[in-house]
Amino acid sequence: MKRQIYTAEHETFRELARTFLAKEVVPNHEKWEAAGIVDREVWLAAGRAGLLGFFVDEKYGGSGVDDLRYHAVFTEEAARAGASGPAFGLHNDIIGPYLTDLTNEEQKQRWLPGFCTGEIITAIAMTEPGAGSDLQGIRTTAVRDGDDYVLNGQKTFISNGILADLVIVVARTDPSAGYKGISLLVVERGMPGFERGRNLAKIGQKAQDTAELFFADVRVPAANLLGEEGQGFLYLMRNLPAERLSIAIAAMAAAEVVFEQTLQYCKTREAFGRPIGSFQHNRFVLAEMATELELGRVFVDRCIVEPDLTAETAAMAKWWCTELQKRVVDRCLQLHGGYGYMTEYPVARAYVDSRIATIYGGTTEIMKEVIGRSLGV
Picture 1 (cartoon, rainbow, N blue to C red):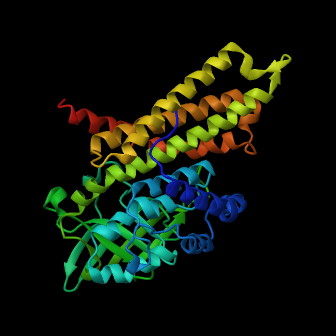
Picture 2 (cartoon, rainbow, N blue to C red; picture 1 turned 120 degrees about the vertical axis):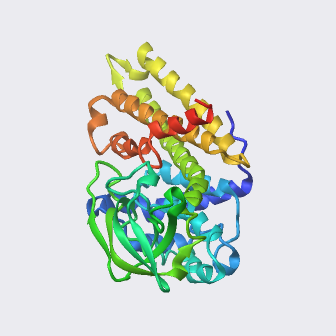
């Protein structure tokens, strides 16, 4: 089915994103995977191309384009290019809203220009060694002391953790107040007591730096509080639907490109004197994937243009599309046979890169819990 949600302006932006990725990212990605981290220069190049913070008001360095479809276009093209290293989606789609919606004028002037140029790379630190999907279980604390908060704790699995110049840290400012005692503090590179641990070794997405972060009596100025004290959990809940939709968008695009590559492979790879796609079993497998991808695409496109996306609908999109991605990539690898196990083939890299999708941003099980609770059961 022909997609209906994009205009000519969106497709022009798509060409910009596709050209940038082909020039600045794809030729370097293998090198970055070996290094376990991307070059900072690619962030500056993205800033020069207008691909960072394009939704930010022009007076702070953005283009003032407040349209989720542009985010979706960039996310789709990055997924199709296999560009799992530079976490542009994290920067734009997930952290961007915190820095545009919760900041005061002084904070906007301090952080947003660098956010748009790529000079300030961002991260958000939620997960802890003992608290993942259950954000109410975090133990990191921030105690007010004069004009500062004294921050202590540990975070793990933090994307952009090594490169980040600005980290939004989820911390307890009132341990006795439950979820109402959680606040968001911005920790900046170079603050005494802020240390980064090792760049974690992963089975996939190896070019994206993922780190442990440590905070030992870090004095964070009260001027770095995002929004109001004690409202952090509500801010997180408000922004999680957009994060989960972003993951669903990437999952659909990544699954579609692997399917397209596999379909072509099945038309050209021969066994017993004929293309492997002509065998009934394989043809049925391809037909099932094509149908499921079409259904997933229609649903996600509807979510992209939904003006009031609920947490439940975002959870549906996240769990369905990431599980579909995992299923499609696995079946595509099987259709490649032994070649699918070779890392020189895109399907092999997609297999390990995609596995995290059903885990980060809230596991599939948590998504089902969100949906189930909304049903009153």
